[in-house]
Each structure stands twice: as C-alpha cells, then as structure tokens.
Image (cartoon, rainbow, N blue to C red; front, top):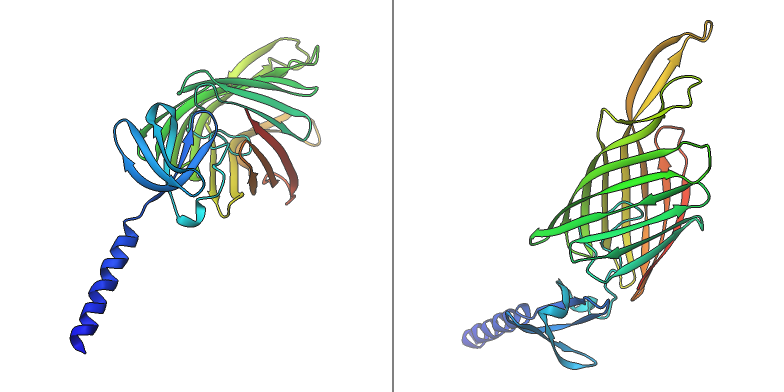
Length: 295
C-alpha cells in the first residue's frame, strides 16, 4: 500500500511538472494582428505556436512585434491595440514602423500618430477650435520589460490675435508588458507669456520646476484593461492686496490632475472611459470618453 501511494505521488509530481512546462504566448505581429497559443519552439529564425484554429503556425521574427507570456485562459483575448499611450500621456513603448492610430476625445480633440521607424513616431492634432499640437516621440526596449524614450509636446493657438502657446520636452520610463505596465514621464514645460501689463509682446519662458505624469494599465479580462493617468505640475499664483491692489507676492505650488478608468479593446479599436479630478479645486469628477482606431 505504501509503495502504491509513493508511486501515485511520484506520478502526480511528474504530471504537475509536465503541466508547468507548457508555455502559452500571445505574439503581436507588425501588421496589427496577433496569434495566441502554446509555444512549441523558439529559435533565432522563427517562433512556432500551436493554435486552436490554425494548427501549428511558424512565424518569422521579421514579422513579429513582441512575444508575451500569457495564461491559458488568455489565449482568445485581443492584444492591447494601444500600449504606446494611456488616456493621453505616452508610454516609452514605441509605435512600430507603419503602424498608425487615430484618437477622438470629447468630439473636439482629434489626433493621429504614425510610426516612421520601429523607434520613432510623429503625430499631431487639433483641439477644435482652439489649438494645434504636434507630438514626436522615440522609444527603445533596453531590457526585458524595460523601455526608455522621450518626446516633445508643442501646442499653439488657432485663433487669430490669441497668442497662446505651451510646450514640454520629456523623458519616459516604462516597466512591464503591452498588457500590464506603468510609466513615469518627467519633463520641463514652457509657456508663451505676455512680457508685461498692457504689452502686446510675448516671450517663451521655461518653468522653474519639472512636471510629471505617473500612469499605469493592467488587463483584467478578455476585453477590458484598467488605467490610471496622473499629471503633477507646478503652478504660480500672483497675490495682490485686496485694499490697495498692489502686488504682494508670487507663490509656486504643485497641483495635479488625477484620472482612473478603463480601456475596452477590440482587434484594432479601443474605447477609453474614465473620470478626471483636478486637485486644485474642490473635489469634482469630470467624465472622459475617447475612441481610438489603429490602422
């Protein structure tokens, strides 16, 4: 009896090890499609996967954007079509060459971004009817699950005689995969400010303190990822004497814009929904909705 029990335990252990050795992956292709299944073989030339509908598929590395280990339950889910950005803030994950996406938020904010190489993308858009902006970006994978990058955000007014302009140069650090990651961006902003009371002259001035974004996303189901994006920036408040109207002082302080929500994904689209809450005023929750299309 003891020998039979010992044999049973040995067989159970071997079976568990055999099950543990099975690896399931999601392979994101450069053409925007993805293939999921059991990893059979990986070499310097190709990756072989056993799929439930296509059988064994051999994919050359030249066609592959990324390979991510997943659970068996995740085989039939769509890959995240927008790992390069959160609600608006970028990650350091680059847009691949030839990939493009369009975003519309609030029916007023329209933007497009295109991958000119596997490490550099260029885009821009318009916030109708107020501003025009551009968003060049670079990104590199420097280690497993580690990306570094940076870029520029520049916006200027579309309204004549309204001398509006803002910009920032930033660097990015992202840790994680396309499905589960977090990002820290740090940048130095600049504003096109009036040189003095009653003057028509404007001058670009860099902020004395950096600004930051802290963002993250994680998949919780086949079609849903949770997201958060939080902006931290310095603002200046000019104080005047209420009686005389004379200048008293200028106070600088950090404020933030917090957000949380979800991304609902398909093969080439994503809908972002969430709530925005500025901390500089009394608590308020502003609804956010955007549509993203990858093409």
